[in-house]
Length: 191
Ligand code: 5GP
Ligand code: MG
Image (cartoon, rainbow, N blue to C red; front, side, top):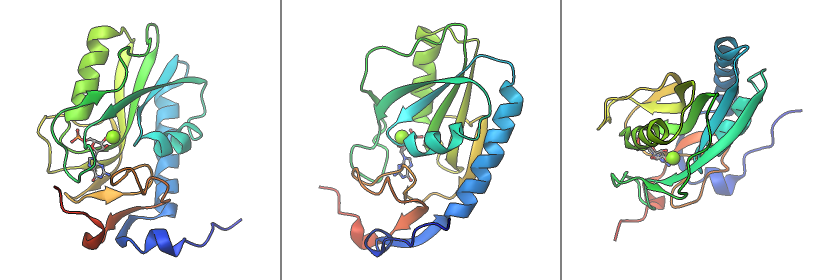
């Protein structure tokens, strides 16, 4: 079955599409195959960083042809704007139990690196996984405040604010099936 025609009211807000549906599907299939090879025979727990990682997680885990468990961690680092404010707020006090498991941490995008860094620190301090690996759909290459790279990454992109496929602007656009760049007129000036 072919995919639904784009809803013009959602797509109208985009200046351009950066990663289309076919490219997402193809790349996520490759990443799933790689992860399947790397974790074959191992007890795997996929830990998704919410909310941004939810759409990526849903597609990626169906391309990982292994038994696995799912956990999530909910954080905020943007607080409604288009730039990371530098502090990472955890929405829960307990980290998932990863004892005896190989953990694969999933996020939508790696930008300054502060979010993934803060999460890895807490997981290392508070849990005892057999190993800890990271996987992001998108990686901005020029914007790191912390020297960190993901073990698995889908696409390298430039330093621009993107939405769609789980990524939001002020809570919206997460359900766009593509990754795109908003038209400037849809970005409200920060107060
Ligand atoms: P970092 O802590 O690496 O600067 O940023 C990571 C988090 O900031 C991501 O999980 C994501 O929620 C958010 N983020 C970073 N870049 C973008 C972007 O271009 N668009 C959106 N919507 N969120 C972003
Ligand atoms: Mg995020």
